[in-house]
Length: 78
Image 1 (cartoon, rainbow, N blue to C red):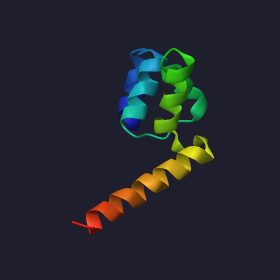
Image 2 (image 1 turned 90 degrees about the horizontal axis):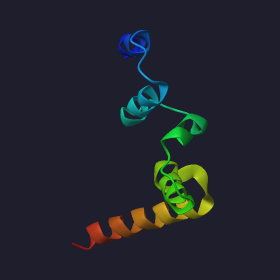
Image 3 (image 1 turned 120 degrees about the vertical axis):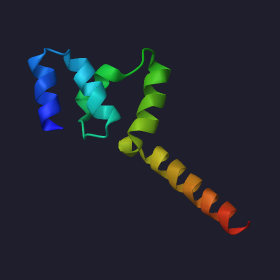
Image 4 (image 1 turned 180 degrees about the horizontal axis):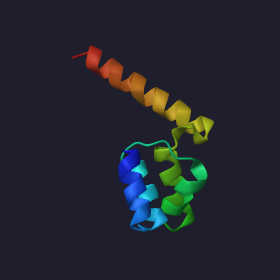
């Protein structure tokens, strides 16, 4: 992966393209560089943050935990 990223920098691939590639490949990125990939609009940004960074708020953590419990209960009752 490091060799590929070095080649991308050598061929002057734009930085936002490299950040998007890292994000899609699961390479850890920080929240500041992820801001460049956010959709326009306040509501769309909030939804994007909720699903791509679930640790961003306590409400999202609670939602995902409840969703997980609901799925597990549903699977056990089949």
